[in-house]
Every structure is written in C-alpha cells, then in structure tokens.
Image (tube, rainbow, N blue to C red; front, side):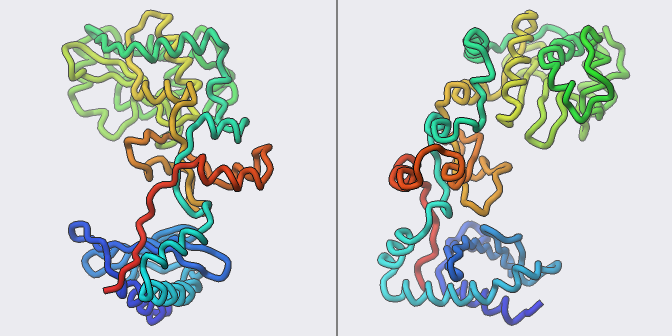
Length: 365
C-alpha cells in the first residue's frame, strides 16, 4: 500500500469542516474522476478514517487489513478532485454547490417515487397485487385491516404445528420448486412432517417437548433454549427473505400471540396467502407490518431510488423510517425497461421523483 497516497487523501479531507456527531467527525463529497462521479463518505473516529461510498469497497486508514488494489489506484484521482472542489468552494461555496447539483447525474442521488408511478414505468417489476384474483385481494385487504390482537389462551406444540400445517398448505408451489425440498410436496401431511421438511431446522429443542402440554410449551419458551435458534422460521430464506410464524407473550394481556411476519416484498404473495388460509381456518393471529402490506398491495407506498453503484439489498434501511420504504430500484431501470422514450423520461423523472437532501462538505476550515 502506498501510505503517502492515503495520507494526502486524508489531508485533503481535513481541509473541509466536518459535521460532528458525538465522537464521530463526518464528511461527504461528490467527486468527478474523468467522466465518472463518485460519492465519498468519510467518518473519523478515534484516529481512524473510515471511507465508504459508491462503486468501491469500504476501507479504513490507517488500515487494519489490506486495501483493494483497485481502490488504491483511484485514491490519487480522489485527492485531485478534492483539490478542485476546495478551489471552487473557496471562491463561492453556494455557487459551487449550485453548480454541482446542476451537473450531478440524477442516477447518483437518492430519492423516492410513489409505487403507482414506478409500476407504470416498470410494469413487470414487483407484480404483487396482480398475483391475486379480485376476490382474493379483497379478502386479504380485509384481513390485514382488522388489526386483531386476539390472544390464544394456551399454547402447545401440537397447536403451533397446526398453524404450520395450514401455513404450508397455503403455498404448495413454493415447495415444489424450492431448493430446500427433500422430496416432492405432498398434500395432507401433518404439521410436524411439514415443519421437519421445510422449516429452518434450528428449532432449539421445540420438537422434543410433549406435544399436548401447555406447561411443556411454557417451560421451553421460558427456558432460553431457543436463544440463537430459528424455531419460528417456517419458510427458509435469508436475513430478510424468510417467513416467520412466531409465538410470543403479548404486551397487551394474558395468553399468547401468534404472529406472521415477512419483511421482503418477494415473500409478500406467500405471506398474504398464509394469512388468508389462517383466517379461513379460524386460527387467531396478527400480521406484523400490516399497514405496509396494505400500502404495497394498493400501490400507495414509497419506493426508494438508490444511486447506481449502490446495492439494492437492504437499501430500504438507508431511508428515513417515516417514508415507509420497503423496496428500492435504480433510476437506470426506468430507462432500460420503460416503454417511455428517453427524452420523455429525462423531462419527467426529475419531478416525479422526490429527491432526498444531500449532505455535502462545502466549507473550508
């Protein structure tokens, strides 16, 4: 690693006034390298500078591990671009910022667009509501809108597995095509058999307890044996792409709460079908994040737009919580997939998207 090159970059960053957040000092820049724009964030904490942004792997300096060679090759260009930015803001910081945002491509910025508009421009993207018939959609919206907190008076393993049986029977096609299947999906299996085939497998000893004993379930629940395990993950997936059917002590009274939860919109259709099946079976339950489900089904929520070089996975976490963003796209998708002409998109996307404020380091010490 060329240590002097990184030292020059740090010195260039330190020319600008940081934002102070507790012990953190923060800077944010948009840098032009030839024809490429890079968003660069720097956080300094207890003598270490942490660099992150678009189109490169995060790193720190002084480095605790090796820095990617491709990143190291770009550092002199960033230092040069910082010097040019310093020269511009020294003349007039307001004019410099105004000029930057006039030149900055929209694909480098974060924003939100109403799902109904995103769906018009990207008809094949996230066809959630179209997966249901009109009758199914009406029933599902009614179920989600009930906000029922009806507790279950007592819980046993047998009762939980009955919930699971209904949940698995709601989406047979999931398991016919699932990479997790051990054999072809079969109807009319018991809840235990389905659970053993298709749940996460790390049940924390749940399947070992006496199946018909409320006391046994309560002892297991209170024992902490399930800590670090996934007994409620009935449809396998990643950190945000699985479906949970959990049992918990409710905060609003005695008994037990059975809750259905799935964060990712890629599992919404399955989750809604599970909710419909549980309701038809007369099994009390709640749907976590029900209001967001309703908004997504009605195309009434906000979709995040991420900078082109940023990842979409988990990107919803980058938006203010009050926006309720659950799904994100890249602006370029509209140009690649929309039937609208490019000139039309150029004229209208600037206003159809609500662009989030950008934090820019534009004042010198």
